[in-house]
Amino acid sequence: MPKNFRHILNRVKEDGKRLIDIDWEKEIIIKYIPSEYITEELLQNLPEAIGVAFIKEGDEEIGLDVRHEGFLFDGEFLFHATSARGEVVAVDFFEYYFGEDGKTPRFDGIVLFVIK
Image 1 (cartoon, rainbow, N blue to C red):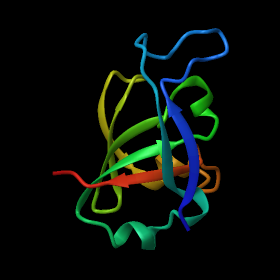
Image 2 (image 1 turned 90 degrees about the vertical axis):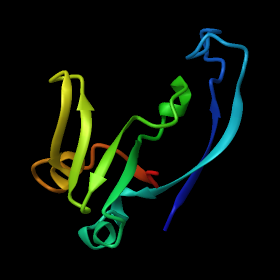
Image 3 (image 1 turned 30 degrees about the vertical axis):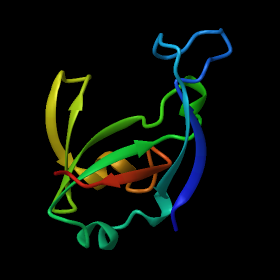
Image 4 (image 1 turned 180 degrees about the vertical axis):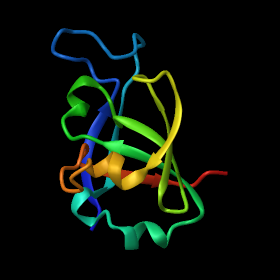
């Protein structure tokens, strides 16, 4: 089920600049759960609180490893900062991820991580 892609953190872009202006880069492999496997059943089997990072393929070309991130509670509620409203909000995870029609994912997948 997980999908992998190679990514170079802080890679020199086509314009000769880096996302962060330091002389450092590192190759990593990002493993993520593709959209087609993100179901209510999958999220119900997670810890009560878990971190979630959103992956959009192609972002690695501009030096990003994740597009957005937040915290998922009870496999249902996403708490995340939104620049559109300038605050942290709590929203239904599936409405946020798949839109109002429930079919059109905003991202290509997610990475889940433990909060300690």
